[in-house]
Length: 502
Image (cartoon, rainbow, N blue to C red):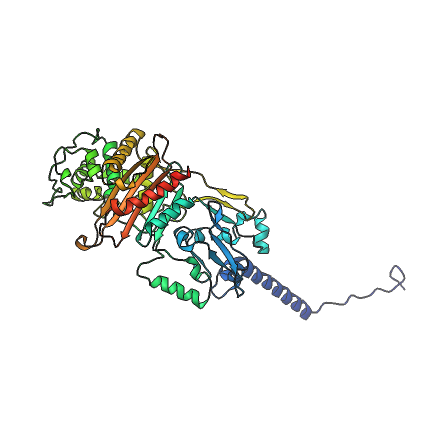
């Protein structure tokens, strides 16, 4: 009898039944389906589910730790405070109304705006640049401490702007011409963003009250509102006329008819002073006395194409002008008949600008014709102060050559020393400026907008001025509503604050 090697009889192996195989296959398919579904939910659907309105996890996590800060002159103007409620922390502001045009708001209910919105990821700690292990942080959902935003603001200039505007409806934008750094950005009436930073009934009531306010305190008039610039636009017209050599000598008669009738019409372009109603008025005299007839005439002679090019070099018609907060598009029409060109040359018709862009006009002239891109932020850092991003000055456009810029600078100096801008004069400083009083409303029935744009530097200095300013008063109870009386003194106080800084 044959035996299996090793002395034992062979053993038969139990067979796997068909039912068992089917059950195993079914379980395997369930595991694969479960893995696929888990992958879909955790990877492909994660963002959609994270931001589903019914999912409060991210919101709870967002407010589970203090928010990073926005700083002015190295000092935070924001903070965070413990709530003791569902959301651990909410945003606070050290001087909410004074900096609202810069910080914007951060609300547990209504979201974020301005710098709070642009840099929300950095401030909340979710920006991938805050960690050297970004992939691991994303997979583990680890949240880094919020980073900080350092602004370009000059604390004293900002305070002067807010104080000067007071209870009037208006705005101020101040720029350092050589760099484009925004030194002041104010809008009034203002609001306290801390009044609705939480999620209580009181926060909701504060928001509703602000949204219903007819004075629109939450409107950023410095960046997001455009106004007819009136005679301040004559600086642009003068620069275009000189650059195109329609005028070669600012002190020679330009040959404007007196009176000047708008081309193709029977309408006379009137002046506010008889000093303009002469046939031998020079460009310098026209700027000093703010002659509508002469500047309208020069606008037509300079031509739409040259005027448009000059206006756009200062930021007009740019729908993507970011500071990094986006500014509203300032308008200079590119299709006009000659009479409309004449009106646009004096800042009327449908020409309209933000205070930011009019500050860029003054700054470009002050910087010898170079217009720098406006910037509101110096740097972004981690919570420990190490840099995440450093901002550097960038040229926006070259508006005119240095020789023309020097001529326009002198025109603006003469406006302050001999003309309508006298209330902007500063002892021990050279100040250049231009007033503007822009009519608006049906049949010009609205209260005029009072404008002033200017720059200043220490007397005797030939360096690029350290500050250029634009001020607009959109509504005031004053009886004398002119740029020289209302806006120029505010510009003066802002410029003085920067000059005092040294």
